[in-house]
Image 1 (spheres, rainbow, N blue to C red):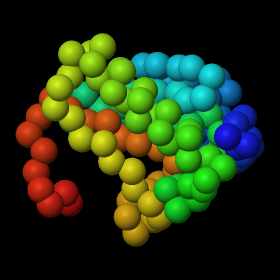
Image 2 (cartoon, rainbow, N blue to C red; image 1 turned 90 degrees about the vertical axis):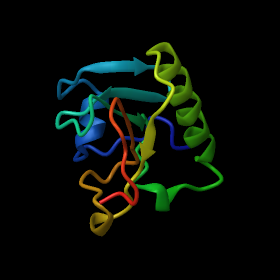
Image 3 (cartoon, one colour; image 1 turned 180 degrees about the horizontal axis):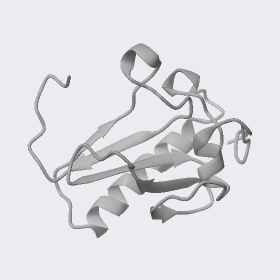
Image 4 (spheres, helix red, strand yellow; image 1 turned 30 degrees about the horizontal axis):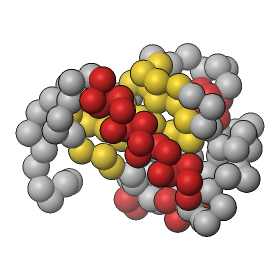
Length: 119
């Protein structure tokens, strides 16, 4: 995981990781950080982000893909600890898909019925 602790000084999520911008922490370890979404779209809505600056899903490579696997392990652990059995995980890739912060992140949503197809 060669991208570990590679920050982008202009990135909102990198600033959150570094503590420059406050957030409501849900979970943290050496590789990732989870925090409550500031505009929740469900009763439970938090983001899980790598501490390495990876711009989006399109930037996942063999060198950093273990980070993504770790994030999904964290999602499974945190939702289990929260007593959540039904949830949705979303990652938008690019502006047209709704990605507003160019740092790989996974939305975890739960606590209401999720419709399909998503909007």
